[in-house]
Image (cartoon, rainbow, N blue to C red; front, side):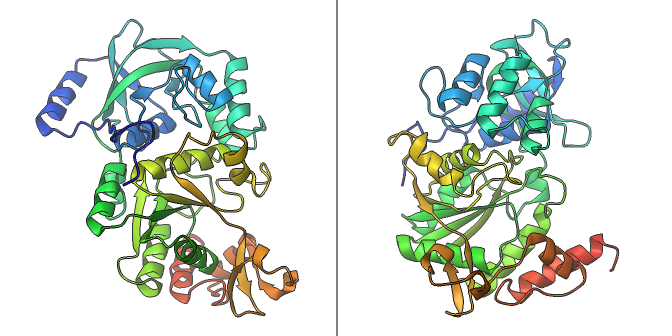
Length: 398
């Protein structure tokens, strides 16, 4: 199986041993407490699950600035985005060597991890904006990633962590949430060697379904990992449970048995476009995948990125030996009226726009909200039904 990034074996920071975990929870009661951001809690979940191998915890300022600038830590470890614990107020932990990190996303704010405090550093506004500009390519406050990052605070707490639970993800998504450790194990159990991963934060329509098939056929893989984000999104995005239901229905009806793994990961979407695409590739390598699909406007938002910036960054900014996983570059896919099937639009140069069935997200939302299924060439009827039920429910029509 493909090696994890930067290590011979995964380095999950979750404390697996029950007795050790209980002892740490007891210790946490005596430690200074820090309520962290949702972003930091999500980082802890990813570190806990081995997704961010080879990191041992939260980065310090030197590493964060180096990663923002050069996509590697000060010691030369390739990583595309800073993994940080930024807060507004550290008055309650000054001088502490170990602290208990409290989860903002769970009732009662239970302890999610214990952190050894290597340093508490004040980050200047100039440094925060530098990191945001490098990560997101903009400082526009309308960009959801920029506004979130610049609102976290200017106190950076670095150091190793021990993760004690996976926040709400295990209990809310028991069938779907998996760690990188669990995904590697299942890939091995299935006997798969070549695996292509598909990232999604949306329900999958016909074009996504066929793109997965194209990648499997072109690469001759044993299977595909459909890996959905389960954490926080921007307003208006489809909730994870609805996406999960759509994807499971599609796979059940339209894919052969033992060709698809449906899993999810606990992380808040960054909307960092190209940088996030590289992060996605890195942690799919940690999951045991050999290939990763990067499509048009991958991890983008609005018009902040060019349609293929998330592909060209692998040529422009990622050294050839930085990652072992290979990128499968996809164009827009759409149903061709001429050919009667879904194609990559770049493969149909003789087509005019009207030769494709394309619907805007706004139009699809309007149709589904009114109980009208999009054409079957655009969306599988079973998937459309799940979405119609959801939209009619939130619009008060059910």
